[in-house]
Amino acid sequence: MHGKGRQFVPHGRTVVMAFPGGAGYGPQGERAAEAVRRDLALGYISGETAREVYGMGAEEVEDVLRRARLGEAF
Figure 1 (spheres, rainbow, N blue to C red):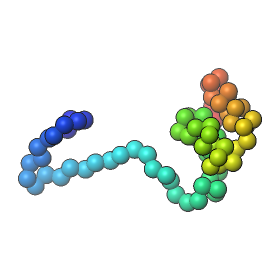
Figure 2 (figure 1 turned 30 degrees about the horizontal axis):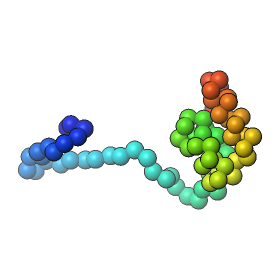
Figure 3 (figure 1 turned 135 degrees about the vertical axis):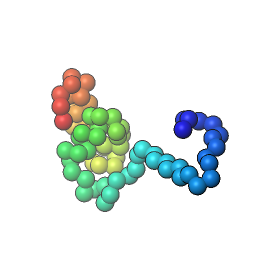
Figure 4 (figure 1 turned 90 degrees about the vertical axis):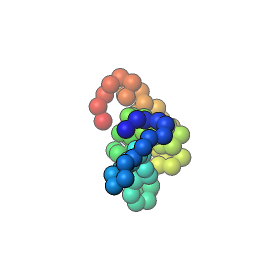
């Protein structure tokens, strides 16, 4: 299928659509700190989200981002 535009789907055929993203499972406060650091390093969450939602300190956020720029693995 094409990425955009109208497309004909023949009778009896099935279209399955999958979209990336999602909020995950469980309360935010129970997310493992290492998982939050990894998500921040990979750009899945912003520094602002890491601080406001997950309670990371500003210094820790900056350290994670600095290490990510240097290519250190998480």
